[in-house]
View 1 (cartoon, one colour):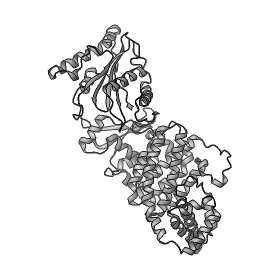
View 2 (cartoon, rainbow, N blue to C red; view 1 turned 180 degrees about the vertical axis):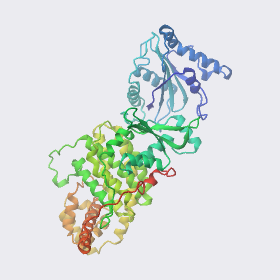
View 3 (cartoon, rainbow, N blue to C red; view 1 turned 90 degrees about the vertical axis):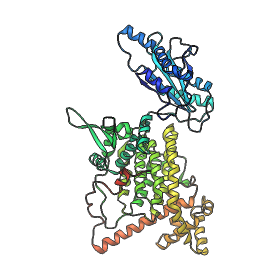
Length: 588
């Protein structure tokens, strides 16, 4: 159940909307289900059509009487005296009766301080139902005794009461809000987008584009130049004395008001982490150099996977610890700000991965990035310097130039990303961050789908190349010797034939199977892995590939007399892939 408290100044105007047909004729049978004084109260929704406007006028005058009395006594107008709180059930909930909605309304006005139970001097209010799944509670916020109500924090109090109402009425339990979410688009914004044929409102579209650009660029100047390059209008708020940029607003191309002027949304209104100060905190800890061309071009998917594994070691040591080394001793504490920063950088990694991953997985990765964005914001202040390496690895993916086209390196990264996302969800859940934990779980569904889309073709190819039965049996013996606690689960895993192929290939490259298995197992615990053979496969392939890359780098250096790397060239103003993220025609 979702309440949404707001205020206004036009009693008659709001009544016209509540008892009218709606902006798209969506209002059916509008009528009063509860009020401060039901007997004798005019109900325009149940009156003959020729009396409708007269009754609206009478009802507005009746509700405004305490307001007018206060204004006459003080000689001052009462600002924002109209209190409005729509209350909507969650999708899938049963429809409530009028009597149940009346109870909901009385509990909300009591909890918010608008009209406490037993207080005959409370504010005048009505609750109007004009649809199956919601009501609108309207009040004039001057009490019968002429005082203003004590309703500070009414939005938070309404949210808390709705959680209790859900339990009482057996409705779906929603997560409590924490004030860190972006403001939802208004009904007017949604209607405007529908008229223009846009699947997203201007605010939603700008939010997605700004998040994508912030994940791709390296500094403030590049952030604004990239937004401008894709047609988004930027308006700066300049300090009158310093001349510094204190804030900014963005406008969608072609989005104008009735006067033909662009409609701007402030960065902090799009999302708290898009304010100029939050962006500067992130950019202050970026790697200043752009990706260059090394003597042997690296596979940046594998590099990102390696960095992501280090993130697990640093931010989630309890989930990194190998089973055999778990002696029950407490791990060194990692600050919450550091973990929050790693979560934010992880969100950027998922977003940039969606631009260069195998094409068939990109839609799910974009959906995962969008869902996870809510999990990157909490009341914990991020220590962005702690996540510089992961954020840099995320940006490096924009320069992959086709690496990972076969999907294997991408699958290995996504396998690790799934584990990290589970750890982040668990971390939020353990701290009571219900909104963030729910967002992480929603993103996990999309990320797992993207992983399967990427990994299944690779696993199928490795399975087709399974070694001979004799070799497979020998490798199985190594599994029993190296990983006795998990051997049965590994050999029963459908991915075991693919792992056997990987072990045989590693052996050919000079890695003894027992040593390779021991090293892969020691990287992180296996108890929570649903498919341990699959997990070991990606760890083994990543280790083998890194060793081969190192050998190739050394060999090239010796034969060509070149340094290991050469100075990087200047990065392009708009990295490859950034345009894909910010192109106005690019849709989920």
